[in-house]
Length: 113
Image (cartoon, rainbow, N blue to C red; front, side, top):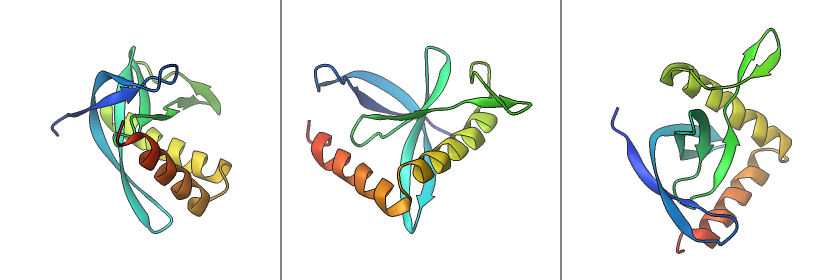
């Protein structure tokens, strides 16, 4: 699978400055399909939004029920764990409609930047 790239959002300045290569991660939240970015940052896997440039969540592994680092994970395992991380985040933010609204707001705010 080919990698794509996007400009990462710098929270401190609000500017999109760092070019990040990523693998597309298709997720369906509620009835809306999103293409997010699965990428490595300092060797650790992360999920970000390529449209707004914002980070969404880190990807973690699990060993005997304890969260462990994603450093050293392969693409397949990172993809599976990333889907789990996004699903967990959706539930913590109030469900699919709330999460979709937050993502849409971030995209509207930062997509033009």
